[in-house]
Amino acid sequence: MTETAEPAFKSRFLQTLQDRGYIHQITHPAELDAAAAAGVVTGYIGFDATAPSLHVGSLIQIMMLRRLQQAGHRPIVLMGGGTTKVGDPTGKDASRPQLTDETIQSNIASIKTVFEKFLTFGDGPTDAVMLDNDQWLSTYGYVEFLREYGTHFTINRMLAFDSVKLRLEREQPMTFLEFNYMLMQSVDFLELNRAWNCTLQMGGSDQWGNIVSGVDLVRRVDHKAAFGLTTPLLTTASGGKMGKTAQGAVWLNAEQLSPYDYWQFWRNVDDADVGKFLRLFTDLPLDEIARLEAFDGAAINDAKKALADAATTMLHGAYAAERARETAESAFEKGVATDGLHTEDMPWAGTLDEQERNDGPFTERRAEALLKWSGLSPSIGQARKKIENEGVWINDELVRDPARVFSLEDVDPELGAFRVRLGKRGQIVLVRPH
Image (tube, rainbow, N blue to C red; front, side, top):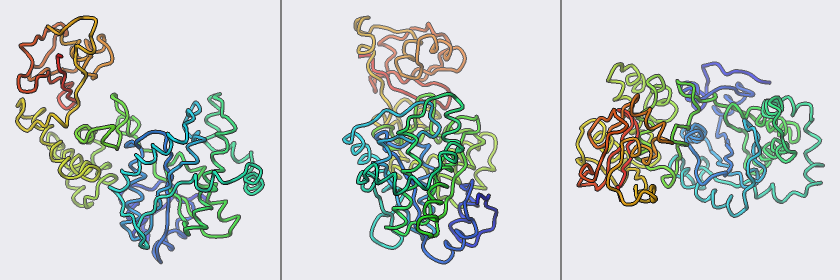
């Protein structure tokens, strides 16, 4: 059943996905292409609510739903109020912590706000719909669920899927609770197919086994069309996991990550990732993207700014993107203390008095201590190495000596804080002395 899609497609939806690099596998390419060319296809992606915000690692899935709607089809955002109670074992070496119902619903309420930036919701034939799988999963009795669906899954096949096999090969325990996740996700597809005529499930390549199981269940039980489509595993040019940085996850909600830091994340991507990320995460035309990714040398920075502007505008709005760009250019390019520096949008560290309470009121601190308390280095030892090797700016001074002492006289008088910056294009954090 598994096939790798090849161009060219007849449908605008699949051709757009192909041109922009979204497609990894499709279960029935010709059938799905014909359906998407003939009329409206309803497709869904599920998102578990394990935190108050999704991060950039989930953005490719959100963009897939956006592409679906842009091509004249109907996206369903399925919040995992039910599946979050179990926890997807895919790619995990340990069970997820179990969350309370209240925490899950609070997380869902917070996550919902992001989708409104990318999709148009409503009652029209191509308007997006947001559902919660707890609506049906929590209504099943245990015996009823097993009798209704357990006969359609074999342990033999489930053990062969990577999500299970890799976990067991690493000799990490998998609870019976987690083992049921695949069944629950498959039943989600069947429920959506019956109630909403949803025929397409999409997700990351690590979800292939779960998606194929859902496709099989719909086709076997109700004998109806069902398709699965996955995106490639997305990594950065350096081999890192998309959405993770040295400072932590790149969250989508502004409460977890400021628009300024979000803009900076895109501005600082690897040169080799610019073209790929422009195709995946912006609506810029392909010919414009081809022009931007052809830039080399210092000019590639203009392409990165275009990426940061477009991605930040889509999530946080044009005003936030413009402010972030002004602040970054002021802090990193112009060398001007406050001109264009929207300090209220920038990250502030706790005051040195708070963090070094045992040392008494601030009088002076070494550069390595300022870097550590900014949060840009986890320890004094690491701070020392970063200052010696990577370059650290405190205010407008390039500091190479970790023992360089800064006093109250060195505080930026307009900000009442030190501007601590790591690297030429790295993060900048404001640190108040007290």
